[in-house]
Amino acid sequence: MKTIFLSNNIITMEDNIHCNAILTENGIIKKVGTKEDILKLKDENTQIKDYEDKCIMPSFIDAHSHITALAKSLLIANLSNAKNFDDIINFLNEYKENNKIKEGEFLIGFGYDHNFLKEKKHPTRDILDKVSKEIPILITHSSGHMGIVNTKALEILNINKDTKDPIGGKIGRENGIPNGYLEESAFIDNTKKCMNISIKKLMEAIKKAERIYLQYGITTAQDGLTKYEEFNILKEMSKKKYA
Image (tube, rainbow, N blue to C red):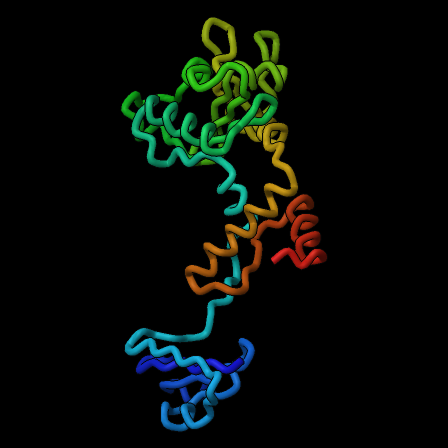
């Protein structure tokens, strides 16, 4: 099927950098040129799309970003707009209800910053327990170097009053009892145990991430940090032509 795209602002990125008409056939560009020349090539089944003065140009090739990280971020609650502890509770509750998080699944949030919270400090496990005492919860600071877990998560991670601070890390405590705050290695090493996301959910999230890239005109992306897990998922999606 033929389609002709018209615009007064087409940029080819070739030697003849400007044109005002493009002919495609079955999604492949066959010819670019003037409106008069290209319109001569139409037939009775040709679609004509006139974008007037809107810019048309080749899609972008992304040289370095993190599309798999973006996909994972779509599976966690966004806390970047939280202004206080109540906001954190409300955002987590909203995400929990919308995504039907059940017992046994971790509820994950990302992006809070204690510097911009009304309370000017990190929340504690008691704050997160107001969201749920049955569902384990972990929220990540915007820096990615620290975070908070609720009481249920502390139990699952086997962190208690007798747990020593790991090398390069810190477990927050109040009167000797862990208060949910974890920093550096104490946080980073334990987050790996919390991200128990199914392969099916990750594949669906990567598809959503692809659509976000496409909205910005990016049709080819390089994943800047592909670990073993992400590589296997991308490989599986390619093998199954999951598109």
